[in-house]
Image (cartoon, rainbow, N blue to C red; front, side, top):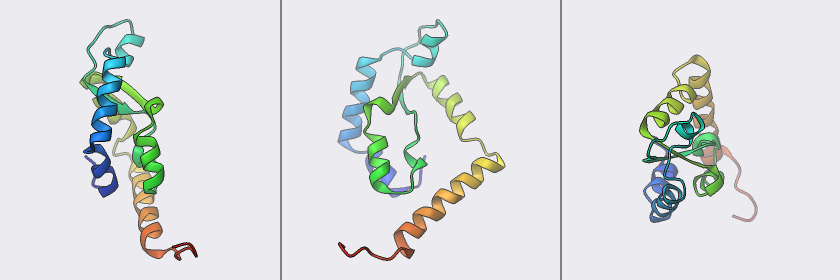
Length: 116
């Protein structure tokens, strides 16, 4: 699980739990299995564009709660998607490090705007 405090707060929110339940009610069959002519009950909801792919809380919130960014999946398909997308390859590790660095810069090193 993520260590990002914004992500943790959002994933544990009532708003997320309601949206997740709505998605599973609307799409109770795993969308990946269904595309392969299999019928498996969906038990998990996946963000197609990862919430942590953006370095700021506002963008994360937009991705987290966008119904069109959600996919109903069975556990096996969800694990496989994450295995492929978030492997520990050199490129994946570098991308994660760059996002963490950008979050740090945004939080601690940017000049405050005149409106703040």
